[in-house]
Amino acid sequence: MANDPFNLDEAGEWVGLWWVPDAPDNQVPGVLRYDPEGGLSLSLIGTFEDRITSSPAPGLTAYQEGARTWNVIHGAAEQREITLLGCIATSGKRTMFARVKSPDKQTVTATTAIIGAHVSDKKDAAFSAAEVSVEDLGFWAASSAFEGTLGAPDGKIDGTGCISVKPVEAQSVVVDGTEYCLAHTHTLPFFEQRKGGTVGRMRDTAFVRVTPAEPFALSAALKAASLVQDLVALATHRAAGVIWLRLEVAGTESTLPNGQSVPRRRADVLYSPAVLGKHDAKAVDRNHVFFTCDSLPFKDVVPRWSEAHARLQTATNMILGLRYAPARFIENNLLTAVGAAEVLHRGLRIDEKPFPKAEFTAMRDAMLGQVPEEHRDRFKGSIHNDPTLLDRLRSLAARPDQDAIALLVPNVAYWATRTTRARNDLAHEGKTPKHSFEELIAVVEVTTAVVILNVLHELGLPRERQREIVQEHPQLRATSRSAGNWLEPPESDS
Image (tube, rainbow, N blue to C red; front, side):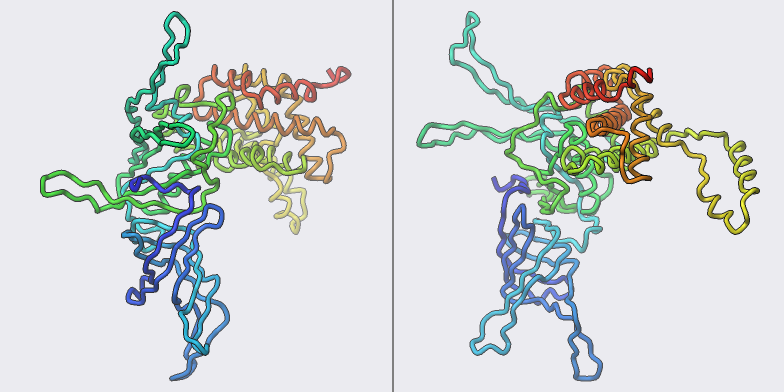
């Protein structure tokens, strides 16, 4: 349908006129093409001036090395305004000295396209709302417009049944003046006649609508899309790609002569998100999900995630990277997992100084008094009143539900000690001679799971659900078995 958002995993083409905003009368015909893998490419029949010139003397033009780029190119195609951002000419052909005159050609690539609006740059506050759909959002929402029934008189399925549609009530919450709304939209019934039979179908799509109190820019919309994307990725423990992003253009609402209001004009955003969503791909397996809106309601998790996202994003990105783009060598994964734990501990702002401030200052001053003055600054820079890695790991293990932690790693002290030893040996000696390959795998998996449980705990996931995750999630069940096999002290040490 023409009003449907443009899916980022589908190709598109727009034929129109294009110009640079500071030269609107120089309009060049061309075709904008979007490909999910190749991105945005504008093929012009004609050229924008991309040569860098100077005038060293009157009447003299000098051409310099390099080429111009354009922050913005505007266009009009398919009866829609189009803005291209981050534009670079990648190829061109001029024919001024050719025997047979033919049109010049130029190809321009862009990082982002806004199909439906002209804006001056990414910071132009031209929009009033953003709507985003990401993979597995409908499953995470734990709601659907569809209900199905099967006829089974006397307990036997008789071949009858129905699929019914009931609009889903939107859920919304306001965070710092911005409204987040979880909503559904569904298509009308459609019957497709095929040679081998008839297919009847409808589509229910979940999306999040973000409405700030004041008009906002594309950069803010991309940030809001990332917020939703990262939340669903955390909840489903898999990469959640952006399927589509649509904006409402501020100031475009109107009223018909009969008094009926006309909605604001909408614009589709074409860009390359961190993960590209596949709108027809198979949904996540329910056994692989950490939580849905059933266990952590939308109105509760969004304010908590909005507050924690910036603080915890680095740690969660590192952990997701271990799941979806793991390094080939266990040493890299070890540094990533332990690094995520350290980053998370700092992000949680846990104030755990090993020594009281006054006591530490006195000890530091006494030590510095024994150091020659020419080395004092260097020595002072190496003295910190910060917890050690061992302290941080123990602290993280003490935060989530302790029954869940006990199920995951029976001996927290031994895990923390062996993890610290492995990281320090690798960082300081370049190898881990006192750890077997299997033990290093266990260290990485347990540390990763402890980080995950901490993030879920920070979002307020109920303790009962934390235990269920360790018991039921395939990855965490395997991690628990690995911890029992490789992270228990030898009998001679017990």
